[in-house]
Length: 217
Image 1 (cartoon, rainbow, N blue to C red):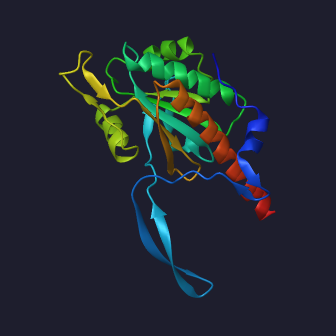
Image 2 (image 1 turned 30 degrees about the vertical axis):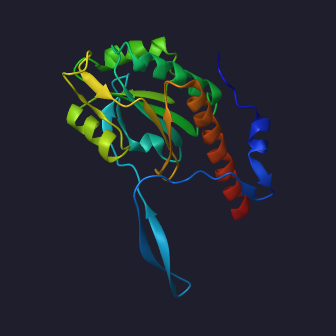
Image 3 (image 1 turned 180 degrees about the vertical axis):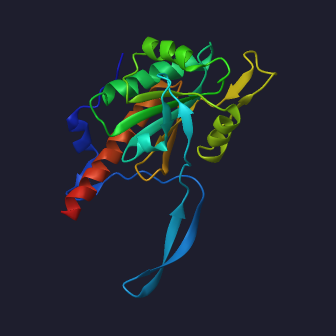
């Protein structure tokens, strides 16, 4: 059963005219000096996720440009996994369903088994999970680069592991990334309540961006 965030839920998140629940920015950060109006101030430089270049389920080369101006969710999986992956992919169907007409929200699923998860294999997997083209991307490519982006950009485990029954070890976490490519949340993708929070947090970000645009006018 899908959890749908009604428009009214956006209003619940607000506590005043220009006040709303704010999500923490996660990951390493460091202070930097900036000059504003002739005065030197201390600002914060936050971790941002890196670029990538992989093929999707339609054999199209996809880069980080598909996420420009978007809020997006990331997970790592493989199509023949019989343990946590089916649960995670089913939960991502909930995320997609809640924002299916919202072009600002996307999903990126990186395979940890690119040798077997060819674009044609991912095409079947995408169809099974009713992935909407241009919204939910299943990505494959060089495994070293995939494992590296998991670790360096998203702070997740993704690797081959002969000690595991299916030969791979990867995190069950889903990652929420904002339009500035900053990490705003980690969620257990096998837990329906954690994914409910992910859906709510996406709505929260949308409220924040809408409020910022309103204030700029």
